[in-house]
Image (cartoon, rainbow, N blue to C red; front, side, top):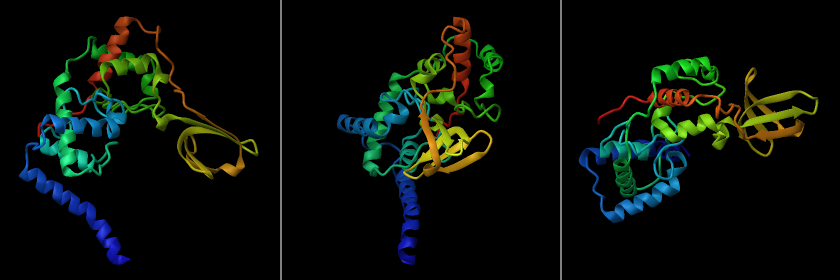
Length: 262
């Protein structure tokens, strides 16, 4: 058992060393043919589109159409980040072969040609003031300041395109991340619990309660258990003037990660 465990723990180290060696030996992508791009597109649509959007326009993960890669922009860096994942982000490691990852890199490069990093219309400074005056900061964390009732927005400009940022303001229910589904529970003794649903299985439900923190409850004690998949954020459709909307979107789009050049 100890030998098997040692081998299992060694595998990530060996993979990291292998990828590092590949990166040093091969700075440029060796798989850039039309067939490679097509193969990369198929892998991307089946495994990457859920976070990055079907056309790489962003969503849960960064927008890939601008050509800005915030954790390294070289072919070798993209290979490493796709294979190993990016620590501190939602980007997981992948199980694809090195050749397949090169194909994904080739496809991602074609997306960059289509995009633009041009700032949207609007005044970002006035948008920042509006973000505070409308109470958005009470629910959303921005670079260490704000609430945690809604998604963190510190780098939202790197994650979502302008159209999607605006839509999330006008129609928050259009796309609600699973991390913000609410569990509404009443126990048999009448005790109510309401908070963000974290995990659920046959016997237990785990939530993040606004007062009690992390709570795990046995389902055998439930009188009521409902999962609310709607957003607690109100719609601002028609509540902002067009100039205000543009300013707010410009501010949110300006919240971007610092770009690396290597």
